[in-house]
Image (tube, rainbow, N blue to C red; front, side, top):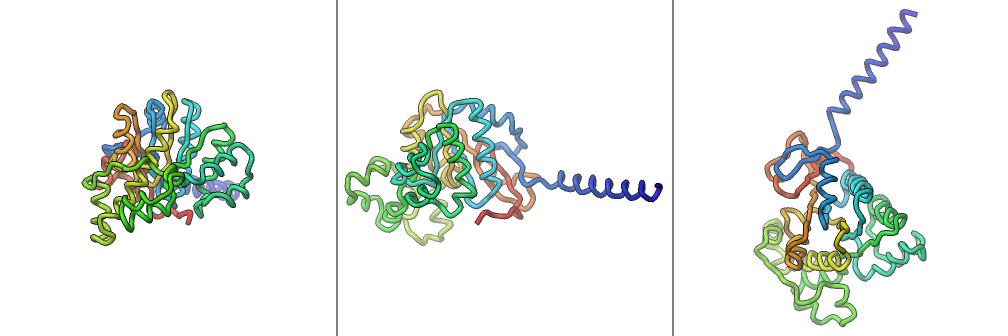
Amino acid sequence: MIKLTHAIFGVATIFFSMASIAQQQPAYVLYNAKGKKADFSKMLQALAEKDILLFGEYHNNPISHWLQLKVTKALGQKKPLVLAAEMFEKDNQQALNKYLAGEYDAKALAANARLWTNYKTDYAPLVNYAKENKLAFVASNIPRRYATMVAKDGFAALDTLPLAEKAWIAPLPVAYDGNLPGYKNMIAMMGGHGGENLPKAQAIKDATMAYFSLQAWQPGRLLIHYNGSYHSDNYDGIMWYLLKANPVLRIATISTVSQKDISKLEKEHLGKADFIICVDDDMTTTF
């Protein structure tokens, strides 16, 4: 009996030690713009007061995607929602609408829309949430082929498109400020390769996502837009176009960053967004 008691005690000690280690190594930490740890519930309260939330993700980060779904479901309990995403190009809106209406099944959606390779694991849960709750889901992005045209030949290349295809893009000509930090940094990161048209291709995406988000947003509702963090970091990109069109919009931003040590937000990430998801850089990826 004594030996059995010792054995049970030993197993219990190991279990609680492992639990303690797990608690000391979280997968992520939530920070505010100033680098102070943020409370999830208080964040939700703040977000529910906004008109638009730009949720910046790392496309292959499972923590980003998990929190997108968790935040969306929680906010859906507080306020009527409209969802929108970079991951769907505007010319695929009809196919997406048919899926939401139950006219297409998942197989038909995949056959009629250009879904990202990680759609099933990372974005299908959001689309299915919209379907189950009868929410609009906006395909907000410019068709990739047109952004490629801009990267090669500038905005003028879009003038050659038929009128019907221009309906999938923000109205032309689009405003552009090449001195915005995000666009200047693109050129710097590429070492000058790609020239001045590279940030213009980014800008036409930002302008289009902002335009179609505004088309779908209604007062009293919260529009949640899912996009790569770079499209909304530092209150730039999509947000610049949103505020240019409607300066009184109440917009919140979330960004995702990765660090080796997540116990303190690194200086370079301060001010990137209202709330920053700091993920351990050992985190596995979805692709």
